[in-house]
Length: 390
Image 1 (cartoon, rainbow, N blue to C red):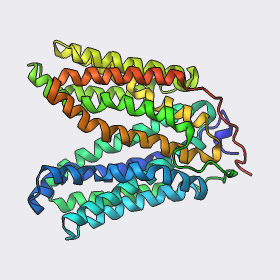
Image 2: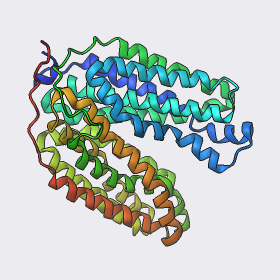
Image 3: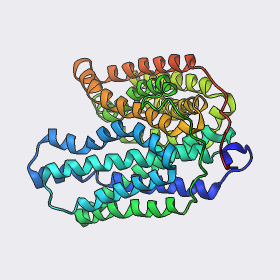
């Protein structure tokens, strides 16, 4: 039997390799972000519209292909699809070296988005398969920490390496995912789960309500990431970068310290309180008169927002049979991409028309709506691991 049917065994080496493969893939993916805007402007003479298109093109293919790769992973193996994702991201890094023009660069970014979708979705479902039932929520959360760690380090290294020349950045974009491929390949292929017929639509029903809650909660995160620095400058408080750093630390620390709560208290309860916590934090930020109060707000918001995703993901997993969990996770995480896609321009319009505090007030309202939605989702017991290890 695998660990998924054993409440005591934790396959640490296998999980470390899966997490490491995800980390390296996102490191390579994110290293390009700091250099792409100047590269597009200097190399092609393009304006802000094209810069935005090049940078965000990955989100489009990730949104469209996550459910597809989830279904492929269910049918053909999580290891195989995750390795494909790492190779696709590495191929994008190599293609950056070629003189392929602006249209070619956009195509490369679309390819990288396909790789990101395959890597993340297959790895998330594989993590669920490897995890003991009583620690699935915790390990889903730690899987997200590995992703954010890769994004953070990749962005920092990309910014540092551009002083050595853009080819050094492209080398990292290609090399890091290949290291991830090696790590993923070091794990034995997962035992096959008995596949059942039917229900193969891309948008599986168990993912819909948790996904909508996640998309609503994304409003607060988008508003914080996009406007907190400028908002605090306008108020005369400053130190917006410090506030963002505190958010990142709280986000990761919450999952490391109390990441077991969705497993211990139930995902619906923790998801509900997480949405409320995010809303309270955003309200504090919106009305903060000084830096300590703004930091307090981001601590409360970060703690709530951190546990919302694993709680909703656990609700999805508990309502989905084992043979369809990759597709369900793919559908669920597509709502995150959808939330970013919608709330990016929406929060910009709110900030332009109503001011920066209104962005956080709207985010708080959306977080409360996510909490209400989370509280209405039926909470099923974890499905039995039928067909595993046979």
